[in-house]
Amino acid sequence: MGGLLFYEWNTLPFVILALVISFTLHEWAHAYSAYKLGDSTAYQFGRVSLNPMVHLDLFGTIMLLIAGFGWAKPVPVNRGNFKRPRLYGIIVTAAGPLSNLLLAFITIVIAVLFQKYGWLEGMSKGSGDAIIQFLNKMLQINITLFLFNLIPIPPLDGYRIIQDLVDFKYTEAVQKFEQWASVIFLLIVFIGPLRRVTLDPYLSLGNDIVNYFFKIITTILGM
Image (cartoon, rainbow, N blue to C red; front, top):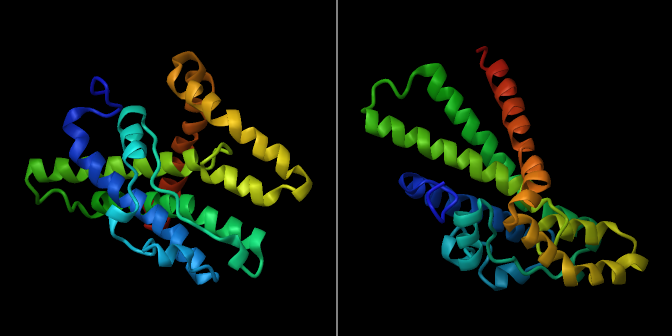
């Protein structure tokens, strides 16, 4: 780690570029899917856009740099505009994390193609190292965002999915959970021993996902 930052200082340009791409696609996926399913709220707020400036959240970005995870501005969604509010709500919510999973898969495809066809061999060492660094950060950040956002704690996507899944009679109990869940989560994140036995093992599942993707891609490409 680079002092107060989760990432090394010399990797920051690649981290920031990967962060901008990943957050932007994540929030665009929420907004676009909501718009296509009948809710124009995000469209009216200018969120059906690939412009990073309408999506990035200052505190969420800082958290990613210092803690290794973060978030962007929530996309406004009015579930009352959906024909099937709970089902479409789940689809819209899941679209964000799934966009990060797709970006991770695409990143691995590109990395494997570079390896298979030796595309880095004709480049200067500096250019080749930069590409490798960027691909590494794209993979790391997107796998982390995919898993992190599925945690069922507000304001993360996993919590919104749980809200749409639970029976209406449990809604009040779920809402009471919001009052203290975020505080507990922050304690888990910033208290080392708690993080090592809870969050870190969960996020380490990303290694299994990456290995699985590599096996699929290399098998398809006959490597």
